[in-house]
Length: 169
Image (cartoon, rainbow, N blue to C red):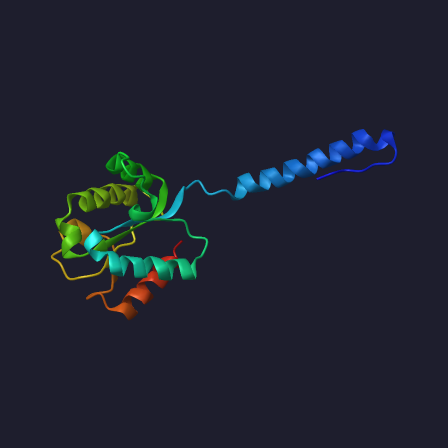
């Protein structure tokens, strides 16, 4: 921005006014800034990629500004990915866990869930937003958190689940 003045005596007053206006704008950005790097971390089995991509697509349609962490899109090749995933879970406001037999068989998925579950228990607003994609014998501790039922990968139920989850972001 350029300030033009005709009387040199006005320069200090105009510079002070400009500095005050600039600090208000900068301060507003800081007040509205989210403490979270991501709004949603997606914990899923890669074997459920098709359904997960559909869920994320609907979430982004409903909440275009949502910052969604999907490992395939965010991880750098050759990076220490597992530690990075755990750190990102801590930097995400919500975690969508997509339950399926493949999810329950994955050590990485269960680790992600357990970290999110710990945060969920300590958060007044909750962190976990599980979606039950395909029937599987859920361990008792997973049944403790209310899930959205979209079995058996029914597309209309998935769309409904995605919209419901997007409303929490």
